Image 1: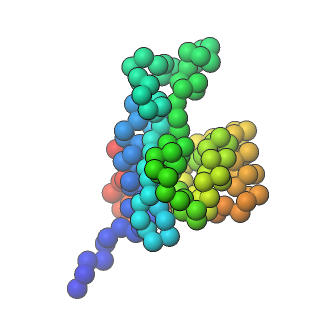
Image 2: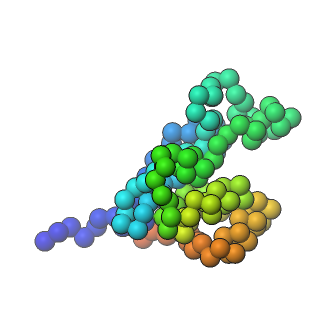
Length: 161
């Protein structure tokens, strides 16, 4: 008889997103993403970090101060990195697993890429303008939003830390 306590596809792909987030060098926020097709094949992964070729030792990780001296001017979000890392593969009708609800800028890229479903772990800023705009955009194009739920990991196991 096969074992019964194996993880679901959702748990597997969110686990990949969480593992990807651990690559981020951001001292405050680590976000990971995993994009899969309808056959449960991983198309791409990403995490929040500096653009390829730009030294993360030379650019700021600060959150406060003049815009040019904060991470916000430079960091590429996990969702956008996963889309850009897809190496030209079609992402049409794909599912995005992401550890934090996408901002409005990532929402635009998700829509343009043709992704049809977003499974997110947490929504840290549900009332923020960027999140409200994301939800409005997703609703306009009928992208399915689903907060990740796991019964497997409620029994003392964890996907992270």
